Image (cartoon, rainbow, N blue to C red; front, top):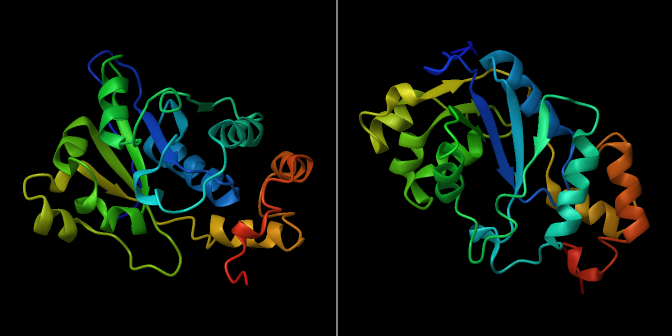
Length: 218
């Protein structure tokens, strides 16, 4: 099923997209899927929300939240429809998506959670996934190398919520933040993989120069 504009809320405002993640670093695939969702689903804006403590990465190194926020701000600076949010950075404990959506809905926003097909298929492992589906509709984008998402997954694991997702058909960019950290750690170029301002920030702060970022370190 291709993308289509989602309905407006009762107040007449267009829905707001929510794109969360570690953003370590943010890269061009993040930006491309956000723009695709914004256009295809008729979103007023897309909120980029760096996680302070990603619950699925508690056993892995993660860059300081302020560095990740700075990279997000640099990456989206030239798009007036993109906005960075610090809503999770001041929160203690794991950054659960459901808590963020609860807070955003408290402002009266009509929300669309933007997910990759990979993340969509892991939704049942998330904290309070049924409540996530109550709080926000899903805009699911494909990820190259992973099976396309469809309503059958919702029908199997979340019966009654089949109408809560719209499945987009593009873009199909295969980029991995872990691969980018490895490139930076080994001195390879990030040009054309992250925005120029983000590449400069990574270099200026030597973010991934420590051997801990190398996948196959001694």
